[in-house]
Amino acid sequence: MKIYRLDFLLKILEIRDKDELIQILDKKEEAYHVFEIPKKNGMRQIHGLEGNSGRSLKKLQQRFYRKALLNQPAALPAKGFLKGESYQTFLEPHVGKRYYLRLDIYDFFGSFSEEMIRENLSRFIEDEEAEELAFELCTVEGRLPQGAVTSPALSNIVFARLDQRIVKYCQVLESQQRKKKSMDRESWQNASVSYTRYADDMMFSSDFFDFRENLPFLHMISRILGEYGFGLNRQKTIMTEWEISLNGYVVGGDIRLSRKKTKELRRILYCCRDKGTQHYKLNMTLMENPGNLLKEINRYPHGRTGNQKTFSDIHQLAGYLGGCRSWLISVLQTEESTGKEVRNMQKLVRRTEMLLDALKEAEYKL
Image (tube, rainbow, N blue to C red; front, side, top):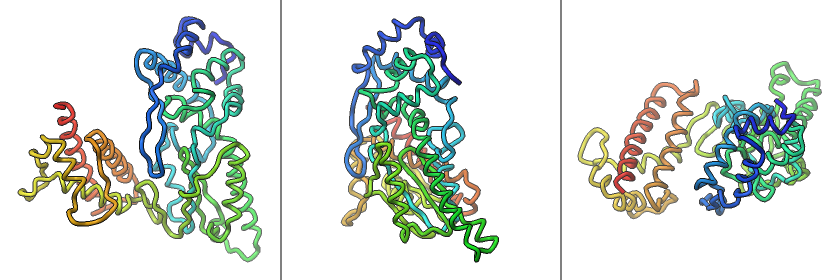
């Protein structure tokens, strides 16, 4: 879909006239509340929309996202923030491969230049004034704010050219491998390098290409990204054989939750249970006192050292449990999960939901 005139953009945004839109955009800076959340290697800056100005801006972004951005094509490797795609579909093409490479793009949303954003908006917005207003709607200080409704979809649109270049490079490697005369039919069919991307996570896998012994591959990906102003977070680079673990998942012959992730979840669930009953029930005395609950979770297991998670408040705990629940449900949707494994995960889902319901009640009382 293309936007040829300004009045069509206003129709998409369901707004009366240009002046009303400009008035909302003029208050854009005060609409955003900037805060930081912790991540493994530092802090991530988030732009949240709040107040009357924030609500007005968010409504416009939601309409532009649904009626304009969702209709723009993304490259095939993109699996994040797209209808019908998920973290599961990001991982699925790599099941059963031998060699794995995971790369992380440093400061993903902050690396999109103003020039790149404008160039890609102009591909589907013909009117210059409409393009300028759309640009202001989606950016803060010329960048994609992490937390804006439009940023994920727009990142896929802008990044499509890089995705396509990376796919072509992988195809060159496949072609070179298939030219080898000694290959049998099965080897020929397996001579591929698979690539998918979920936001800043890039995943590669192959049956013939050992990434650890072919470091020029990593250098070429870095070079392609660098030509567009992106860089790799080298600390998050992972190269493995037979299976790979990332973000709570293990990909190998199938997709499953990592034992480390399920172990941590089981630890938290155990802390919250009523130890005096055979079946799983929550310790309601702890549930009624969030402070004591957090102390119990943060200090258990007693007398041991480890890297178990700690939580500063029940909101943080609820967020973590919600993420675990989503992981469990997504893994349950794969065909490879069967039998006892499924029953154990279903049990974890039920217990996690019990604890989440209790935490919601505790939040309400607070």
